[in-house]
Length: 222
Image (cartoon, rainbow, N blue to C red):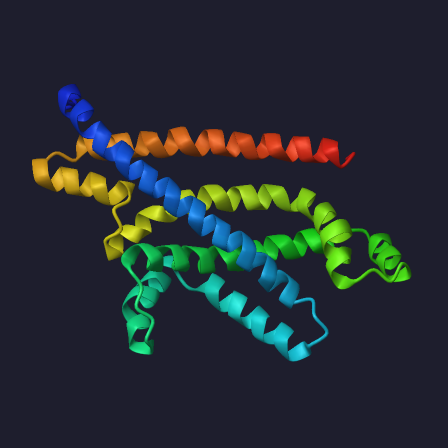
């Protein structure tokens, strides 16, 4: 069977797909930044002496991890207005991605913190270091090394999950490909190009994460 591929059409739609790629990368980067900060907060909130707070945060994390991202996107965008939270599709998508992946990153942070040798904790206690200095100068730098692989995996995961935002009308890569296909009744070229774009971005990103991990280990003397 001959593949009905039209190079002229592929080159014609490529600029529109590249424009949508910028939106996709922006959504992935912004969502990941939210997840990094919120995930750390959730991880630290589970290490307090307040038992009630620890239990509540832990259950919230499990609830977020146990429900689909697409459901959370719908909830933020469609249900939020009923509680007075009116967000644009773009903001709703970023919030949903950030919250969803913050739950996963909180577990990555938690495992990294738990991997810090007990002697480091005892040294901080012996020196009577303030909580802020203990985490920022001693614990978190050491926890970052074992946490980097997981953090990198979720960075790539967020990028590959951005097509979910098309369900609320965000003009990301998959929605643009679908729009082009619907306009021209040709889906082979746009969807193939989308697959290649995801591949060409995901593979180098994974390689950069591994390179960063090696550099970090060398810097930490590991």
